[in-house]
Image 1: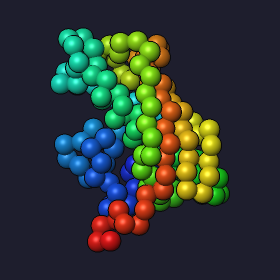
Image 2: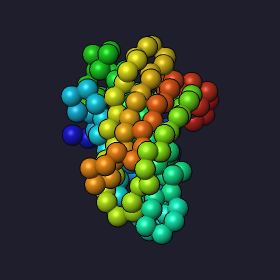
Image 3: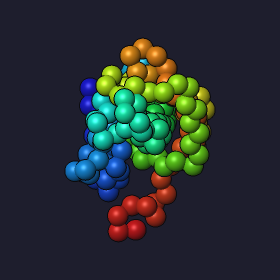
Length: 155
């Protein structure tokens, strides 16, 4: 299955966290699976807060991008479209709340899982978790809104 971010329109594909057109970005890729999104990311040594532990700002960035993909996929599913096949609409962050539950070790692959808990025409509320080596390290609640036309290139 194609990642949701791979199907973002080109003018919305430059995000540092998930934009395929950002050469220096993180390139997070989220997939839609049975009503939830799943992504995996391996932090690099430069993503540290303290030796051996992941920087919390990276976790917030990953949560932000994964939640936007989750919002897009949930809105598509609600409209009868197929996430990961049809063009993915772009959402932007209205609110991002992250709870850090325990220090996140540097080394293991991080797993992100997201689910929409409210889907409306313009707004989607997403809850997600970030785990490392099977332990939940962070959780987030994110409010996503459809990207306004004014954010498109040339608008």
